[in-house]
Length: 127
Image (tube, rainbow, N blue to C red; front, side, top):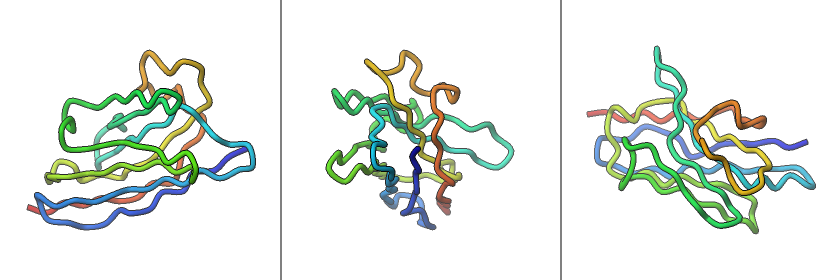
């Protein structure tokens, strides 16, 4: 069994930056497929960034390409999301997700791929 705990959310002005962290815990819990999702009020949860840690292959939603960077520190078993040039439309609850996988996912933003989810951390961007 494993757990995911996010941190790093907060309130920033448009154009600012935040770094989210997602610590994975559990003696043998080292998932190779991990992702960040977000859900804004009244909207469906959407995939933002995903990583296959064995090769460091990444995927990004079009809305965040060039602004967000996903990475993982395997030694710390912690996932990160570096968010720059934040916009008000980035306001949402951000959650990390994880799953053991082989070769990565063909559709890394499919929520059904992931069995492990964190509680989320709120990001609010004001104009």
